[in-house]
Amino acid sequence: PKPRKGVSKQSGANAKQVSAQAEEQLIDRAKQLLREKEIKFKQRVDTAGLAKKDKKKTKVYETSGETVTINKSSSENEKITDKDIKWYNSLIEKGTMKDKISALGLIVKTDPQSSLGYVVALLKMAAKKDRKQAFIAIDNLQELFTQTLLPKDRKLLPFKTAVAEAQSENKKITDTTLSKLFFEHKLRSLYIEYIDLVGKCTNDPLDYFKKLAISILSDCLLECPEQEETLLTLLINKLGDPNAEVSKHTIMNLIRILKKHNNMTQVVTGEIQ
Image 1 (cartoon, rainbow, N blue to C red):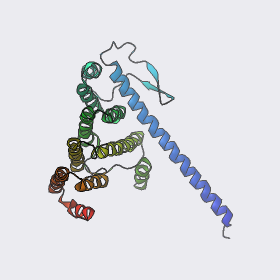
Image 2 (cartoon, one colour):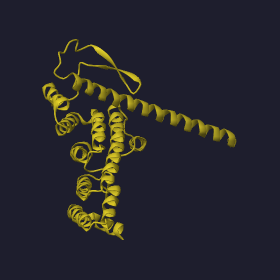
Image 3 (cartoon, rainbow, N blue to C red):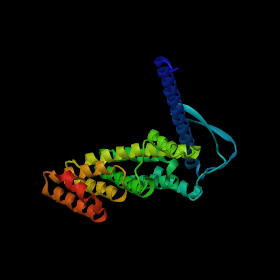
Image 4 (tube, rainbow, N blue to C red):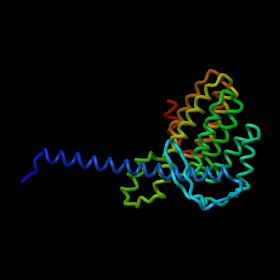
C-alpha cells in the first residue's frame, strides 16, 4: 500500500530538520576551529619576546563572549620567529602610522589563516577620514588580498555552498577542511567590504584619490578572479566621470586589464553598451 501523504510530508520535514541541525553543527564546529587558531596565533603575537614561563600549560582565553581552551605549547607557523614578531609589535606600538600598517601586514603574512583579526584592524584604518593615512592601509590591503590571501585561480564560496560542494564530491569533511572553508567564507566577506570601501573612494571629491582608487581596483581585477563582476562594474561606471582625466585614467586601466585578460573583451564591451 502507498504511504499516506501526511506521513510522507512529516518524514520529509523531519529529514529537513535533521539536515538543518547537521548544518548548524558544522558551522559551529568550523567557527570554533578557526577561533582557536586565531586565539593561539594572537597569543603568540602578544607574548613574543616575553619570558616563556609555564609554556606547556593550558590557558583559557575569552573571545566573542565565549571561552576557548587551547594548548600553548605548539606553534603552527615557525617560519617567522618570535624575534621577528617582537619587532613587528614594537613598530605597532612606537612606529608611525605607515610603520603600524606595514607591521600588521607582515603579521598577516606570517600565518594568513590565523590572522583575519589583523585584516579587520587594517580595514578600520582604511576607513579613516584622513585620506592619506587611509590609502596607505588600502594599498597595503590590496597587496595582502591579491598576493597572500586570495586564490589566483578560483573564486571563494560561502561556507554552506562550499560544504555542499565538498559533500557532493564525496570528500571527507575533516576539521582541517572545515577550518579552511570557514576561513575562506570570512575572507570573502572581508574582501567584499574592502571592495565596497575602495569603490566609494572612486567618488572622492579629489580627483587624485579617485584615480588612485581606480588603479587599486584595476590591480585587484588583474590579479584575482574574486568579485570580478563587481570590480568591472565599478570601473566601467567611472568611464562617465565628469572629469575627463578620470575617464581617461579608467580607459588606460581597462586596456591594461584586457591586455592580460583578453577573454574579458566581450564582457567589457557588453558592460559599456
